[in-house]
Image (cartoon, rainbow, N blue to C red; front, side, top):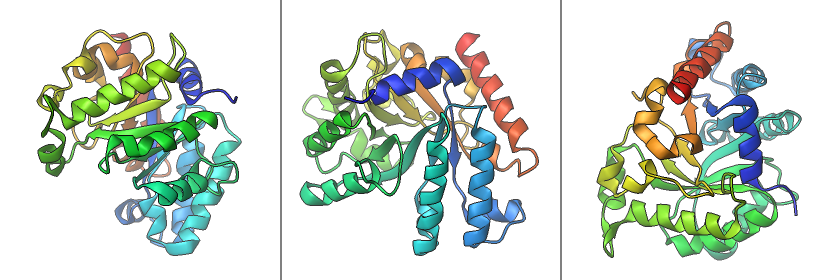
Length: 285
């Protein structure tokens, strides 16, 4: 068995901290960098962000849609970028939000996490809204490959609240997803380490509204990783991470994108370093 994703994440946290840099080459950022909104601009931007991340953070999160919008040539840039990232110590989480059933989900696994996957990464984001149990075969395969899965639980967009706060039995949907992930990690994880199955929880949320009070309380021996977008441009402050996530702070991957990417090609190194320092203040006080 390969090393688990949870073990890889533990190592990244211990050596480089908990900051994650998003690689989101949308059109306005390419323009801010004085790059064309083209495959050439996409490639230059993405490689520059990857180079800036190496040695400064332990985790990156490319958003596939910004590559997909350039068609097959954009996917070729992404494939090359991920191969390059493979030669570093970075943990790569692909933000793709896949979710389906049966052979369709098998095909997604082959594309992103399988032995011959053209897109090489350590974990992906998935949607549970075809039923959490529909993800279990996918999670089992990921575990065998030493890969991770991050499940959308409580997202920061306001439209998501009506579904994620809806009662499923006596608990909101988001809380039940969190509990199911905890069960999976308890069954498959290593005590004292992160589990391989995480939740996506927006850093701008009031977690109690989603029935997620347990997130901020005392945590079990095997932690459920939290991928937390919303820091920086969306309004959550890295310095406030402990007040936002309480007992789960040590399990949080604090994701920043625009707040560092908008610094531009000549200042992105400093922007990442400033974010790392701000997060350290939030975690260590």
